[in-house]
Length: 283
Image (cartoon, rainbow, N blue to C red):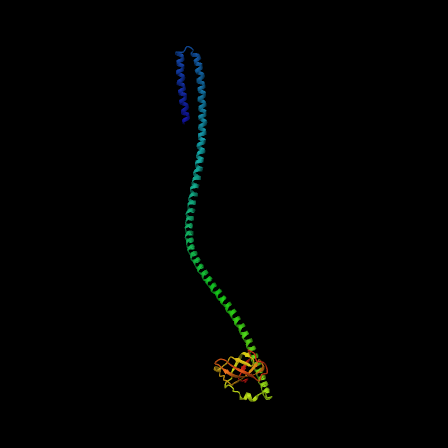
């Protein structure tokens, strides 16, 4: 017997006791007991209907409760299964989490090792870059020096070519001067052979060593030269005056100083000029 049935029985007993008391009261005290009896009877019927309704409700509630219990049992089993599955899944996830944590630790260790190796590699790369920059700077400097040396070599080569050309020109000029000297000596011999004062030329003093100079000034028939006693020049000596390849005349020295001298022009063919050359011999 469940609780609802017990409640219905208790209600029926209470209703019976109440009805008995009312019936007794109406039978002994109230003059209109029939009316009251009918009323009580109707009330009892209503109470009985209510009790039956309560009992029916209790039965339905009992059936619903039993169904609910069965459903709850089924749900409990399902929930238990779900809980077991969830616990298994949790254990699986925990294992996966531990595995991942272990892998994460290994990865962190590997990453730390790689980071250290990377730092060492970065330092090595920086050192190599520094070496490359220094080597590049040295190479650039060497290239600049090579370019400078090449330019200097080109300049020296050009200078050598100019010197060689000047040397050729000087050789040609020397050859021309030699030929001019030969021609001037021949002209002088021809002039002397014609009787142009050979006796005077032979009477004039001749320096022991060849002397050469330049006329620095001319006034009338007197000319000054830039050589003197320091060069072996003496009074009375006679010098040959020429201009390029032309014979100008003789210069007889009258006054001699240490580094200069002056004399009188004789046997002139041309008028002497400043810059004309003098020499003691054409050989």
